[in-house]
Length: 629
Image 1: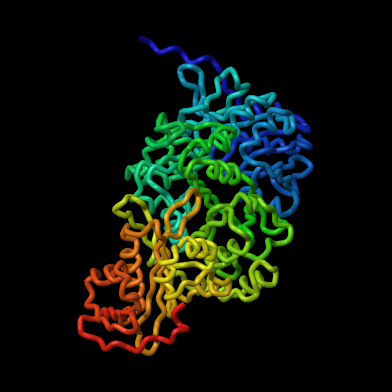
Image 2 (image 1 turned 30 degrees about the vertical axis):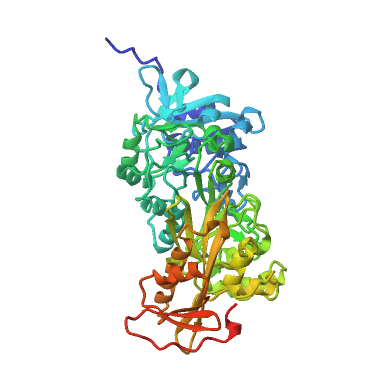
């Protein structure tokens, strides 16, 4: 059967097409790597004939000759996002920045708040049915073209034909122009040690079957490199780049467990290489849709286990995120950050993440600050923030009091700024004056996850200063017998000062390990163990407490083994404990450990010595009573 003829359309020159632009018009320019550079150049060439023309667009990857003080009589850029090619003009005050959520921009075109006279976009050649695809840049293109008075399409032969809600029919286009410039590409930003360290912490938060949103840059690329052990991941993101290719080839991304648009990578634009564009061309696995759909928080939330990864310029100690300006100087834009942070927060098991290096300017300044710079805008509010990740770890802030937020963020700040941040936090009244200094390094190597024989997944990790409320709840969950077994007396309460001592450890002479289990969006402390080092003998006295309702599940054994691992890493000679003679549970944990255990009975207690070396070791004198909290 013969194919149907392509509906007729006529080509005109770019200079002729832009003749439709008049003084005072507002002109939309297609975004990202879909920028119609031929039309942009032709419009700029008319600059002496035009006055008061507003140029509207998101980030564009190509030329922007109209931006600058010298062209203000002719053109003024109304920036929905400030990219590299207009940033200098923004510094000079020659750009009108519009702070707005990406999901809400199409409504501005539709309701006449930001009316468009002309829309200029790049498209594929029409297919046999007369449809052109907006290719790599659907985002605002459809809304702009459908609400502009005049539409000019630059036909780009290198543009991949993308599937989804990405089509314009020739009847919706007023003028067609041949592209004079090749398809725009974006080079991959190389990953470095900092980006990989951040990505490792993010990868730990990504579960099999999760759906991811990520941007473009070193950190998203590094995340995609480090998810090689993850299965059946999905993608729902406003943008992506070449980093996705390897993850697809490895089979990490299948989208088969997505709960919305199952089996599809959903996006509104991409920026990358010819290899990426060739993979997209006529590939129904990729579903390109407009920003008002992709970035709608209610649509995003329909993806279970939604992981949203976004960046920031700086964050204050209470959790306020600035990501569009450096002080009063506008740098980028809102983009889709808040859309995805809120969408992921409403997703079942969702994880909204803000990721940033701990420092800027080659380590000269901290990105975690007591207060945002004067004039800095809050893009994501402190109430919206959940996870914050730097190369030093992940901090969970949502639903936490300011004191815990502050300590969590200081813990993942660069070590050289931690003391200064803590001092400023005390001055601001965020933390008590008596708050001890934080350890310079958190022992991430002692974090591990284990599945119990009963099926529960638990995490073993060193304690943090922010665990005060969790440890307090754990203590008050213990029955009288468990408290007596742990402390040697029937104490009824833990004073605030004691709790402070218990959660602020140096991880060297004083180590504490918690066992936690997921409880809703948070975690439940089900067991705690700690040791104190006797520097004279280089042995450490340890103690363990397990919640009554978690006893008999093997938690105590796991915790003991983790304390042994910590002690060995610290190059201790061994562990010791004072155990009531009738505490058969603890005796069983220790005796089945495989170590040669030496015992000595004294006043109804058994002194257990557990040397790590095979040869016998003399029993050292017990540490003073004050050392055993």
